[in-house]
Length: 510
Ligand code: KIV
Ligand code: ZN
Image (tube, rainbow, N blue to C red; front, side, top):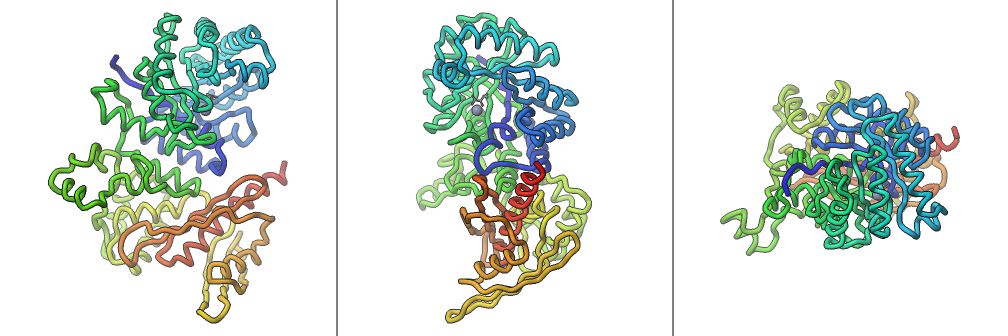
């Protein structure tokens, strides 16, 4: 089979609903912009009926995105479908995505509905969605644990009611590649109407097989795949877009299909999403992990130097990994800097460009050679919301030694008011965080994680710190970047606190 496989990205819906991955509207818009640069076919912007905040974000993404279909998820009920349609109707290409569970365990214990009723409701709600929007996708939740005969029946009914995309989710990451392929093939042979619509798969990664199952779905005839950047998603996550896309690109003789994705945007999209949710990539993550293209063993290095294809099945350039070449320095002017930003896919406001340029110049004073990596980290440190609203760091000083408690003096600004405080602590980071607490007086939380790593090379390299806090069952992460790791630590803490305070405020307003 040949043809194009459409990429349906659900980072903003399935990805965002996973623990520690929540994003504010500005952050969702940045992810949507990255998805447009990637040339994803469909962006699932959220679940409009789930909260007023989700509704507003789906509407904002629908208004901003010009070149992708924008979908909102909805259960099979009028209220959800109305909310989904109201949120996406302004999009250049809107889609309503309705779903209902079809497995015996979900129908009996979750829906408390007999199969005939599920079938009837699915058909009626697909018809209703179609009366509002010409593009309707129908998903059979937990399809891979459903009775195949019932699945065929409900798929037939959904197509007859107007669904133009049928999605087969492996909701709990239960299936295997041969089973997924057989399921799609069986549906195509038992429901010939499938030939006139698009079949889709949506795989979760509970047994580490989301990518393999997605690719098997393609071999079975699926022509849309649902995935997320970095594989974010419920529990163990969804199929990572970068893995599915690069497998298709690297093994055309196996899959015999192509996608419309601009693979050179993969690395930046991955970094942007990690930056937004305040997480670091694991070293050995396929495609986008720090070590994905690193060759440590001497024999490998020798092979790669002789001919890259000895140990590299894809090139770092094909996913847009920036070279670590020196690109700019102390004498580079604003024009060269702005050109560099735009060639790297950053679209900053004038005010952000101004700040980025000032920070670039400051970095040039601390670090001799500036690489693409330094620039991208510098920009990610500026954006997104951590820098807008909330507290910002005006200054700090720490004093520490082997036989004395550390002391930190911190100066923060919020809404034009500058406050300074001092604290003692068990080390400079502890002292600094205590001084920040005295100023901010945050609601109770636990420290979940503190990660520190270097992001570029050399003694003067930038240090990145991610601080994660837990409050009210939710996690809030902040990222700080500086050649000074104490400053990076303070910045990351303030950013995490700003997110926590924004959340606490929104709860109070409810
Ligand atoms: O995993 C799943 O079943 C889903 C559906 C709602 C599409 O996310
Ligand atoms: Zn899912």
